[in-house]
Image 1 (cartoon, rainbow, N blue to C red):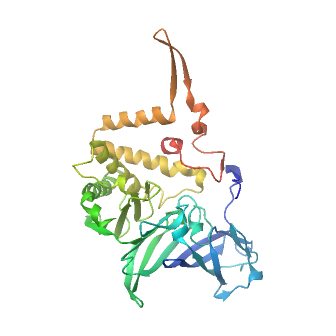
Image 2: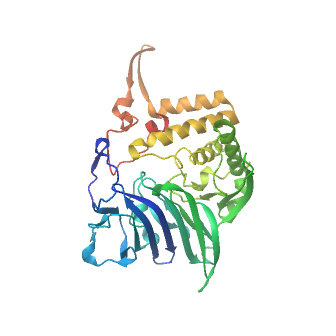
Image 3: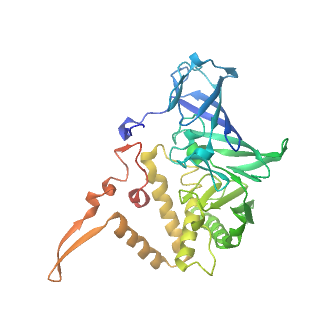
Length: 402
């Protein structure tokens, strides 16, 4: 078992290589999945030929090609956490990697995993390197395409980031979908979902007149409970235009809600993934608080489209730049959609109960001592960490409300 290493903010270094485009191909199977990545990359410093170090974990490497020429084993170094090319070309070049993964056996629920007969991903903060070998850091941004192939009967719905540009049938009762995301993004925003889902469909017309298709995907039995979520999404899109002047930038926006998604909600570019609790509501069982929570979380993940996705953070020490700002935006949204006073009281209550927790000691009905427990908890760190263990969760209340 690897021992967590201490990571220091002061040790940040620019990457030696930048990625321009990333073309992915997934062949989803019942026992294993084959992933092919074709990356166009170039050195940060022209003429430099520093070793190219890629992160990778729980991957079975099949082949590596540089400029379409397959490398022999002596031309690269492979260990349990990295794939290293000691002598890559000095200019722009292409790198093709084919590897095998087993989503059915992935119990970490990071990267690509299978649960309840659906394939699903979670890549924030550093889960993408459990899918393929990559520079798994947020300052590596690239344009992505993704082709997904799978059994059509078992996985009739194939979703990824961006716009759906092509789909069709293949031999052997299989089908494919080709997705293109025209805007650069870090790999933690990559998302893939495949399974038996049905959608509630709607449209939203932006202020410039573009019609955007909206779809909320759930298991069939949950579809009637998605009406409020669709209302919340359209309200968030309109509010972001009116208040911040930010218009949605793609032709399609998908939300997937499944009961066993492990992160609560994730803002993957154009393919938000939620736990069902944060999307589904019906008048028979949901409380006012449930409806308010869905409105806020749907808004929060949508608002990340600009504050987090199009404009992202350099490294994970800068997490509050996207999370703190987007929390502020979703608080303003919820305040405008409901009662600003009630929302403010609720937000302050959470700060007092979770971030700045206090313990009172009483004597003869008078407070004689107040201890601020903040100084003795994991929340004692500043908004921007000085250091962090690579096994430590990055996101705390300080990042959300710092």
